[in-house]
Every structure is written in structure tokens, then in C-alpha cells.
Length: 64
Image 1: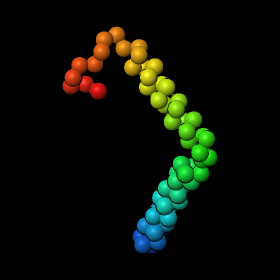
Image 2: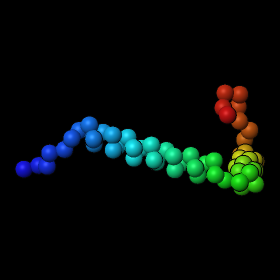
Image 3: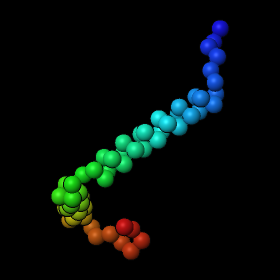
Image 4: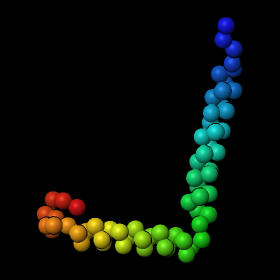
């Protein structure tokens, strides 16, 4: 026989877990020093320029 669970409590526990996961992601995103955020931004821009520069033909009007 299966265990009896209180659905209200299970729903609230799942909501708490989701909220904790969101808080952890937010801490990771906003907890970085400004220098690291800027470095990541510059690296992403550098990679974009490198990929765009390696194209064989220029993009047409409809593509981005």
C-alpha cells in the first residue's frame, strides 16, 4: 500500500524548492564582482566578432 501524503504540504515543499533554486541562480548572477561581469561581456563580444569574421560570405539582408 502506498504512503498517504498531504498534497497541500507536498505542493508547498515543491514551491519552496523552486524558490530556493531561483534564489541560488540569482545569487550566482548578481554576486559577481563588476570586473568579472565586464570580463565575461568582453569575452562574449570577442567570440562574436571572431565568428562573424570567419564567415565565408557576408550575411544577406534578411539574416542576422
